Amino acid sequence: MAGREFDEFYLSHYDNVARALTLAGADRELAADAAQEAFARALRRWRQVRDMERPAGWVYVVAMNQLRDHWRRLEHKAPDEAAIPDPTGTVATRLTVRDALATLSPRQRQAVVLRYLADLPVADIAEAMGCAVGTVKATLHRARASLRVELEEEDDDANG
Image (cartoon, rainbow, N blue to C red):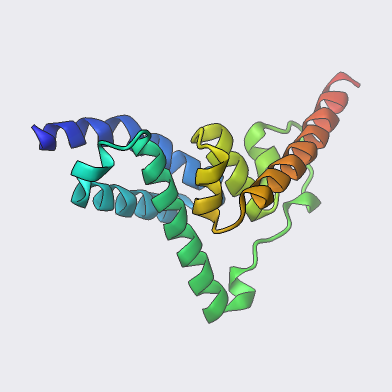
């Protein structure tokens, strides 16, 4: 039965999608809203979505598009309020992966979360972010380099 099949899909993927969106830079409430909307769209198109190679990947892409649309609307309404504060000014005694992600630009954070948490292929990430595949590759490269520096600095601090 399709209802039960979708319910199982939702229960097995919702938390991961919402968590990925939160790590991509959305607050929990916004992430939950975007995830809910993406799953609602998946339900409306369930016959098509369930037959996709990666239905969860489709949901991640739709949810990320929801966030991008939300952020675009904020930029047009109040550019000052939409600005994300630069987290590099804060010093932490112990840097976690989440803290390291917070040091990335929003675009880098989105790419990293979609690639390594959602496990999406680069082409799907490009679609979700509205850019070229080469841009995603370059963004991921810069993000990994930045994360490497942040995490190595923390490791040096802890050992030193």
